[in-house]
Amino acid sequence: MPSLFFIGACLVTTKALENAFSIATEFKVTFLTAKAGAISHSLSKIPIYRGRSEAEIPFRGAAGSINWLYLGNKGMVTAEGLLKKFTTAKTLPHIAIRLTKLISDENTTMRDFDKMIKMDPTLVLRILRVANSPYYGLRQKVNSISRAVVIIGINNLRNMIVTEALKDIFKESESKDTFSRNRLWLHCAAVSICSQMIMERIFCQNGENVFLCGILHDIGMIVEDQTAHDLFTQVCKAYNNSRKITDYEKEIIGTDHCEIGYLLAKDWLLPVEVQEGIQLHHNMIEDVSPLSITGVIQMAEYIVSQLDYTPISGMNALLSLPLASHIRENIKEYKTIVRDLPDEMSKAKDLYSPHEE
Image (cartoon, rainbow, N blue to C red; front, side, top):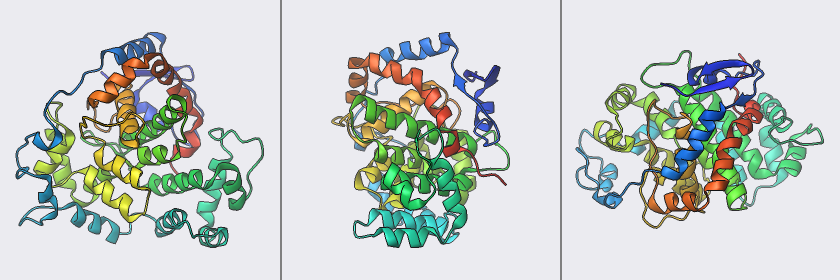
């Protein structure tokens, strides 16, 4: 059964919550007291994966090694091949890709950036709308891109540009029973916000890069859905919690969304730690640091899965042992994050709302 939420005074299901991110809909998310308490309590009973190292986990069709993904085996789909097909279709707005690369280049001047972004007036208006939304809580109104950079910083602006570029990609005309892009978008939104909360509240570190990793960590699923739709549908139908979703992807498609997302982030010249977080977020790592982007993304995925913000209905999230231990040792702080997450998502509705037609 899906988890229940209050939106305003109305009790709705998780599926209805997806639609609540519409710009025209005003809402404030709160949890039933009993539900929030049960989720907080569950953090102290985290299931831990105690299997062998990642390289030793067997699955049918793996050909013995992950390196086979790059060998171009006859009849096998590769991450590079799917990504090439995806980018050739120009699914991602070209200006957003160029802007992201400009931001990643330390030699870029504000004049370069301002000249590029003015080529897309619609994007400028969207960014200014988000910059002035409750999510950033600015006292002064931002009325120019240069002003936005000064007030919210270049990395926050980068995150907004990436998020804006992704909205139309995740949008679908109707939700599907097997896989819903709307559901995946809500999952990515929840992971990005929760990740930033963990990084800033628990570790007192800047959360901009982990936010970016959170919003992009499952972008590979969109690539699979668009370029290998029938195979990806088979993955979703075959999936159950006996194995990781990446095992099914490698077996049926020939690659997985983590590797595809990693290559996309690398092509976008995103920070190396963001690339690694996308690539490794499903790996069980014996020595992962809770402070690393990979560690924070795994913990955020675990927390939001308890709230039914999952990319596929019923999907479980696993934690590497060091991360489970870390949460137990800081259980009070993590219960507070669980309590505050719905309100933080409510503030971010302008950031994640679909574009108006």
